[in-house]
Amino acid sequence: MTIFIVAELGINHNGDLSICKELIDVAKDAGCDAIKLQKRDLNAVYTKEFLDSYRESPWGKTQRDQKEALEFDLDEYKEISRYCKEKNIEWFASAWDQNSQAFLKKFNLKYNKIASAMLVNKELLKLVAEEQKHTFISTGMSTYDDINEAVNIFRKADCPFELMHTVSTYPMRDEDANLNLIKTLRNKYKCNVGYSGHEVGLAVSYAAAALGITSLERHITLDRSMYGSDQASSVEPHGLRQLVSAVRKIEAAMGDGVKKTISEEIPIAKKLRAHLDLEANH
Image 1 (cartoon, rainbow, N blue to C red):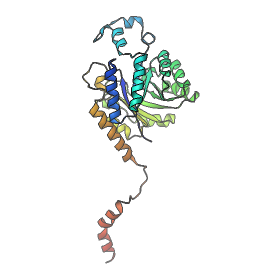
Image 2 (tube, rainbow, N blue to C red; image 1 turned 180 degrees about the vertical axis):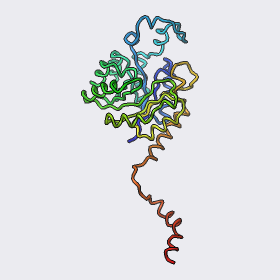
Image 3 (cartoon, rainbow, N blue to C red; image 1 turned 120 degrees about the vertical axis):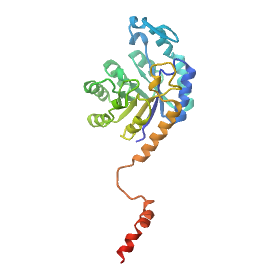
């Protein structure tokens, strides 16, 4: 099975549609299968007290100023959808509340995503599962009980899904990756398992690809020094091209696990074992 590679734009576009389009171009150029965004109804996700609290950003002095600047409106999402169709790349988003899921439903997307933070939001899980679209479920910050509940909701709704092993630190330390959990989740839940990475560099993602993941998600950015909390754990354009290319090579190299002599080996075997035939004839 080919690994489904998702370029997570998240909020790395900084609310700028032109940057968003550049990131879509980067994902398409690198050979990604899809790009992903995040959608929030700020008043549903955050309290007024929090939104009114102080936060220095390029857009103002409050949390509301910063978070409103990062949210695209309906017209901007329509343009993103049009642009992705023009570029022939899929897009979808993780909703952080029920209003946002209803908003995304307008676009008739092929995929849904449950962010790790939302894994414990049972009402949102039920709403997403009702759509019966293939859903990627990230499992960061979660217990087996949390995952059990989510899996039960999706199976009860007969909604196709795959889990994504995730460690929700930004950036994640390599020693915290616990990639063997990919196999554990696959065996425990009898489902496909992907990997959503927040590490710096590419080596951990390569290792995940060799463990039989069915999807790979990495945050991408134009420049890791840009403003934003996710930029430092994101992959720049050159790194993304390198990542996709290497993952495709890893897929091809894994093979079927059956021992066989390939045709190209036969003449080499004759040459390198020729002296054994000579010894046998004396």
